[in-house]
Structure formats: structure tokens, C-alpha cells
Image 1 (cartoon, rainbow, N blue to C red):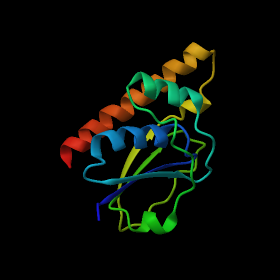
Image 2: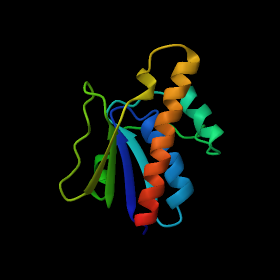
Image 3: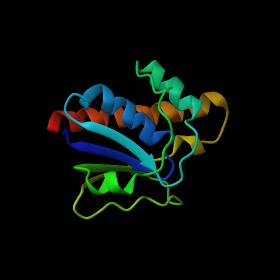
Image 4: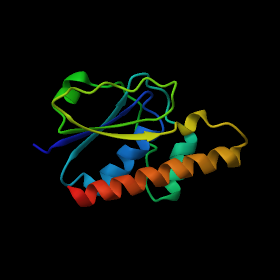
Length: 137
């Protein structure tokens, strides 16, 4: 059985779905990859678009709640919540936790291009952190 990496945030829509998409591309040969959220919401269409720009298709992923039993058995949990008003999921003390405090691009204000830019910034930060994580594992 492969070790499990679980990406979690408040809603399982943009950040954790993007992280799951990149992780599946980089790590799925060595790790089982899951994502979930406290308050699952629809996969954001701008997340799908910016990931497609990066060559990663997340259009078939879906938003899901945190599976507490699976989280308890995870080898690593990566929390991605970064906005002050968010409730960040609590992880079991026995699970190695990384925290990547990233803003929720789904809450971005402004016109379509301004929001796309924020989605791209968050996507690029997730990609860089995952690349670094992949190299360290």
C-alpha cells in the first residue's frame, strides 16, 4: 500500500484541488493522493482553466468532505488555508503536517482578468511547493 498524502482546506474547491492535480502528476507513482475540505464546494471553473494552462486536467476531480478515517491514517497532511476568516482543518497529532498558508483564489475580487491572475499566482505557488516537496521525498 502506498503512503498517503492528504491535501485539505476549508472548502475543497480551488487550492486543494489544484494541489491534488499537481501531486497526481508528480507523486502518484509513489503516493496515494487525496484532497478534502471542511465545507466542500463546487470545483471553481477558473481553477480548471489555470490548471489546463499548466497542462494538468482537474476537470474530472470533484469536491469532497474530509474522510476522517483516511486522514487518521495519512502519512502527511498538507493544509492550504491562509485567509484569516477561514477555519483551517485540525489534523491528528500523529500525522506529519505541512501548512501552506495560501489565499483562497475563489474569494478574489475584481474583474475576470484580475481573478485569473490571482488563480495563476496561487497555482504557481502550489506548483513550486509541490516540486520542492517531491524533491525532498
